[in-house]
Image 1 (cartoon, rainbow, N blue to C red):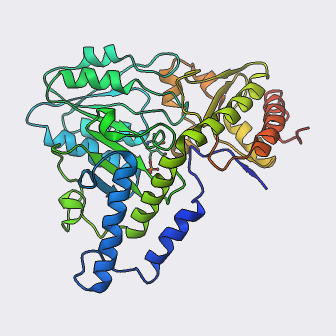
Image 2 (cartoon, helix red, strand yellow; image 1 turned 90 degrees about the vertical axis):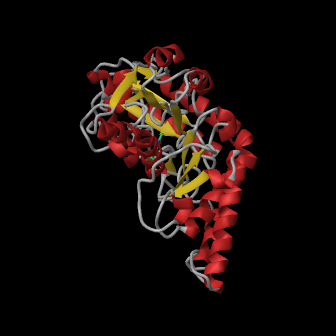
Length: 386
Ligand SMILES: Cc1ncc(COP(=O)(O)O)c(C=O)c1O
């Protein structure tokens, strides 16, 4: 069996989630907006999923808008908040290490006159809240900083950033919690953000399903127009099965998060120690303030892409960083922002664990990964690791 160490890209749907979704594709196929019994049953399932998801993340049902994934939630949050605040100002502050869903959505807004200001990060990929404070002006409508990074796992000081943002009236804070949501204690109301984006497929839920939490009273302009679904904030017949799957996945994770995070952290630390034993390898991201499931490295003198291919031949699924950017020759904007020169950033390798990762798999990975890394670096790709 291949060993899957790319849970930051996506996770397998867990059996309980699949069983919860299946009836909605069968007899429960109704449209929640229909008045008849089929519709009413679908409406009940959808409303229940809304309630359960909201409870699992510490919010209220009416504050949750279901979307087609993290990317759509982020686009709705950023564009919706920017346009709703346009009369007040045009400045948007973000970090240099956001996911492309954020950076590209903001670049799009930049074409319409919004001023996008990127605050730097340190060597570990962390934002200094004082930099955010210095960038804030009276014309700032939005600040977008992720809860934790998907490539290197670094957790941002969101509470400190939120305090700075809210000391100045008017600006909203968006937090991309797509990668962090499954692993950090998640209570949206306590995060002190106004908008929080989440996705289901990083937490053993279905792909193409996400949610935006919108603090009650926050005004957004809808970005998708049509019917009046999701309280007029996101038009389109709802993905009822997806909603049920996402609610189930978050509910299950909320109950088991502390234990799962501890187990995965211990496994991850064993793997990190094994890989760091190879000369010329450096851990990227914050050594302590990082998501428990991500082990990320720079291998000097090697191409990360070559290591991923060689690992695949050995039955280990890894990645160089963001799955969305794989296949491009560009180096990671995250590593560049952290100060890694391009030649070093080319040596990026990310191993990400999941709730289902076993100790036996980690034992095998601790044996195979260092051997493969050494061999690729020494120029002999694809040799059986021993
Ligand atoms: C931090 C972060 N933000 C946003 C996304 C995009 O989410 P989705 O794949 O659900 O569109 C991802 C997933 O790749 C992510 O890791």
